[in-house]
Amino acid sequence: MKKEQQTNIQKHNNTNPYRTGLEGLSSHHRKETNKLHKDQEKWKMWMEILLKTCTHPSVVGSSEHFLLVCRKAG
Image 1 (cartoon, rainbow, N blue to C red):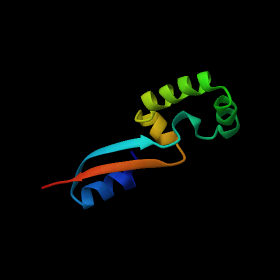
Image 2: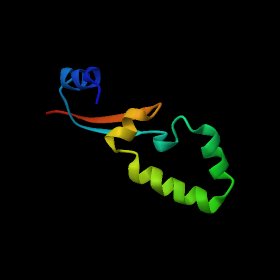
Image 3: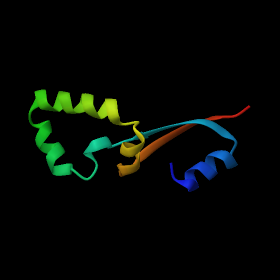
């Protein structure tokens, strides 16, 4: 997690951050991902891989967009 994100989480007294990369391993691979979509069997396998890996720190860090969910402390 970037230092700025960690600082904001602490500043607002939030806990238990949950991060997910929204594009996952498909980030920066738009053409290849679109090709996979044309074959439903391959697409289904790719979606399973994305869902299994989307919260891994390296995948979150390489995604173009991410979702950060925190719980307000207290």
